[in-house]
Length: 83
Image (tube, rainbow, N blue to C red; front, side, top):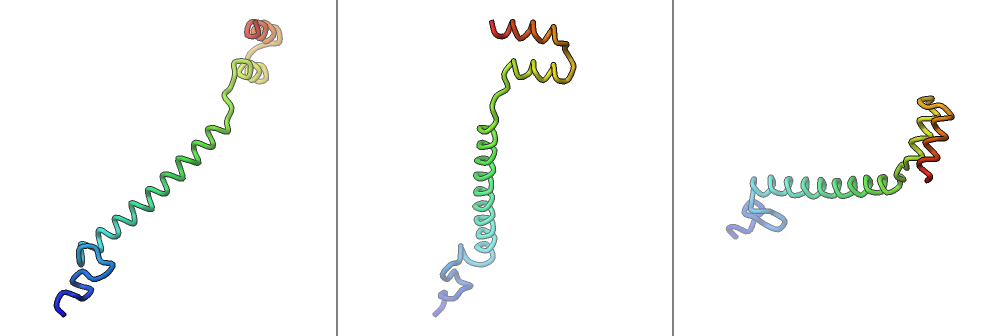
């Protein structure tokens, strides 16, 4: 019966006590952290894919809306972009 108990590395025990307990906590912590990183990166990728890239015309319209350029300059620059 020697060596078959829990303290000697029975079922479910990594390398015996206390090293096994520490390694088990590190293992599960790393696994949970890895799953968290995977889901957060997938969420960021979806958010990035959902955004459309801003065109030069969009930027020009925003500048006109903010009052940075007047109607004449807006028309001239728009004409340059479309040609």
